[in-house]
Each structure stands twice: as structure tokens, then as C-alpha cells.
Length: 102
Image: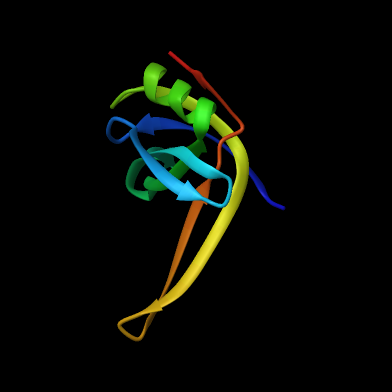
């Protein structure tokens, strides 16, 4: 398992939705963190999708908002699939911890 830690800003407010699973209903919260790497003309921005479940996700939605500077850490998930004969790879984090950095 890979673990990622990053500091960045939320690109928009977290979104909460309810999904039906094997163990009944669950609430899932999704948000994206933009982290800058490098400087000057070599500066790049990495956009990382975060997925938090149930109570932890609700806490993220309550205390985080667009533009919040946060530290997030958790295991990396990789999902790959074919679409329009192009191979797409999505990376994301299921955060185990977060905190405001300001």
C-alpha cells in the first residue's frame, strides 16, 4: 500500500452524497486538493481527488471549504479503465487525517 501526504488548497467545497452498499447506506464525501510543486517556469500543479466516508467525510465537509489550505494524508487508490480506446488512470487518496495549515 502506498501512502501520500500533501499540503494544498481545496478547489471547491466538498460534496456529500449517499450511496447504497453491501452494509446498507453510506455517506461519501469527495473533494479535490491542488498542490503546487516546483517554482518559476518549472512550477506544476497536482490535482488529487479525495474520498472520505461516513463520519470522517461529514467532518471534512463541515470544516473544509473552497480555498482552505489543508494537510491531508492517507493511502493512495488507483483505478484504471478503458474509455474511447484510450487508457485513463485516476489517482486519489482516502484521507486518514487532515488539518488546516493556515
